[in-house]
Length: 271
Length: 365
Image 1 (cartoon, rainbow over the protein chains, first blue to last red):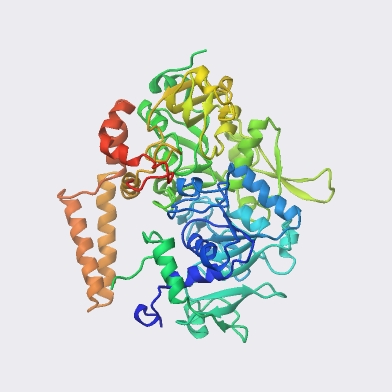
Image 2 (tube, rainbow over the protein chains, first blue to last red; image 1 turned 90 degrees about the horizontal axis):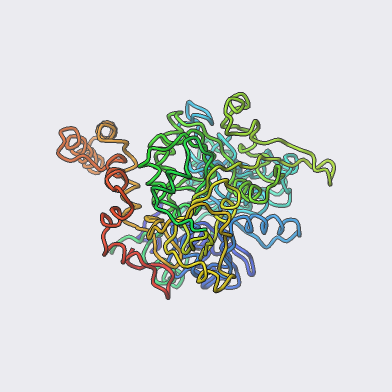
């Protein structure tokens, strides 16, 4: 069980750290706002300074001084290498795939995810359907194209309403219905979701079956707790589940003092 | 040719009821809000909208019933409102005809329009709901002259037989409205910061209105042609509207109005006072039910008491929260002109929004 006093960091800080740890040298990192941005900023600051954060509005190699609120924010725009219009970003991500380059790694979020990493960020049907849903969200934004051409890391809260056997609507394609599923619909088979970062642990996809398994649990969580939180979801929990260590005090200090001092996305409990 | 005119003249003359229309800007950046307010004031509507990355601009027009067909890829004031509330309500109530494309596809469609292409093949949306589901059915599309008969079609790549790609239609825009930093009387524009899809729609639309922070002379704007982004002959009207993107951002000039975007987030939750009363009563009943289900839970009890008080205050008129209608009365209908709006916002507030040159944003916004 998590409690702040025992661990000294918040669950969001653990997630930001997990994000940062999964960014590699020289990678081009497609971030949005929120936790992925904090994680990428942390990576850039201390873990792998050679990475290049970019955003779907077309702003390349961003290094915001203050945390931006949106991908088109002046805070990205004023401190980047190139201000491309969005269509250049779209062309760039497609050409990275055409050139067989796998430098891109992207963070996307969503409201629902299935065992193959297909993500819904369009609507929840409830008693309705796509045309008249119970809950409507923003729509795809850049996520659909990103999930088509790039390897992705999916950010989602561990919650039984979010981890479902079948998503109502596929906004961003994962591994579709399993091995060969992406190729069948015309998507690159050598790209797809790599992992799912939640507040309780990290999932990956089995090489053979493309189904989701538990890869890491955190110092404050256990595989049993994770399984219990999503009882109807067929998460594979086996010997591959390992403990991921939490952030060091230095890392926590960097997040709080340098990256998000205004606590725009990571709220720190008082006292 | 001198194209300078007032905002009311520009909207009067170049925005028509029933137009297929697109605004420039990106969610909360360089959105042509002043022009949107003027459209609201003039009562124009029945629009078919290629929305691009939209935010409060189209949310207000949807809330006021001015949108007939909404072609969406993303609608939110990111960082303030997760999903624009009038947009969301219109869809959940089944009140609006809409279609979804991905942002990549919609922006490429607008670019294709600027290139004059007949249709656009993409390797996008395949396998997703964006291809599988149509917001506007083929039958319905036949009845709507402003939309193409198909949302998309799978076609064979003639240069790579066997490869299926997705063909999408190219928007046929009647009207484009963009807000830029500087324009000259002949319509030449300087856009600073990311141009977004603004140049594309200015070329593609039959009629283009440019609102700008500053009007400079035709000679002055040509002093460095690396800065000019739109050929004046694409432009029909040039309107000086300082802070014309407020409450969104304008690169080099001003930041988001943080307080007002938060105000809109709250206000746009309630259509009007009646809606606020009904929603608060419902919230109170829900909170009470939750508290009663777990007797002894102090937090739930406190939340229920608070919600009941808010519902009571709204019901008897002691304290009705600000609504969408109130917001529009204050910032749109209550202002005859943009200058009136600037006075409502106030001098101090506006100067606080000014970007700090060394940062590129404001720390006082």
